Image 1 (cartoon, helix red, strand yellow):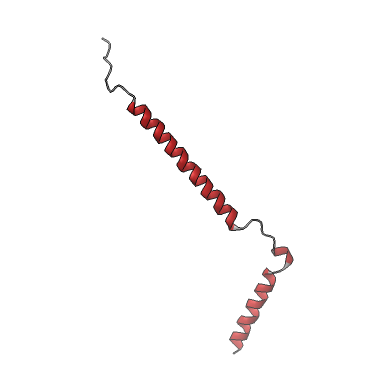
Image 2 (cartoon, one colour):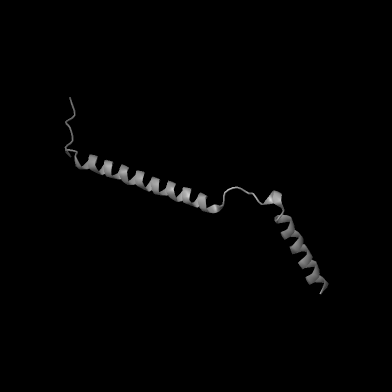
Length: 71
C-alpha cells in the first residue's frame, strides 16, 4: 500500500509541476508543423513532376541521329 501511495504522490507532484504557468506556453502545436511539412512535400512532388515532364518533352523532340565525327 505504501508503494501505491508513493507512486501516487510522485505522479501528482510531476503533473503539478508540468501544469505550472511558466510551462504552459510551449509554442506551436504539432498540427501547424505537420501542415507545413505536408505542403513542402506536395511542392516537392510538383517540382519533380514538372522536371520529369520537361525532360520527357526534351527527349521526345530529339532527332535520334548521331552526328558524324569530323576527320
